[in-house]
Image (cartoon, rainbow, N blue to C red; front, top):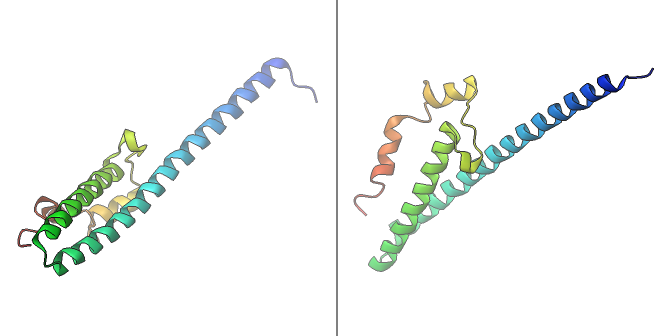
Length: 127
């Protein structure tokens, strides 16, 4: 079977556009996966720094740990907002599936419950 040049061009353009869209989708998925992995690392670092802060007896060291902990929390919050609302610099689309939206915003899970952000406002008032 012989394809005329017009059909061949149309078929080539369609194939290119499909491939381009697939690559773009994979890039976005890779960014979401990488940023999610960073969130996990940041949560572990937050736990480690919190433990060090509680255990430390040296005032200067505690100040240094507080500063680092504040920076980690700020990065974690920025990244979380990017995952939820999108962030062009991080290549995050901010489009949650209906299932994820339910987990984040509806009972019983409500992972993004507003009161959780009270911690970000003043993470260690007594320490």
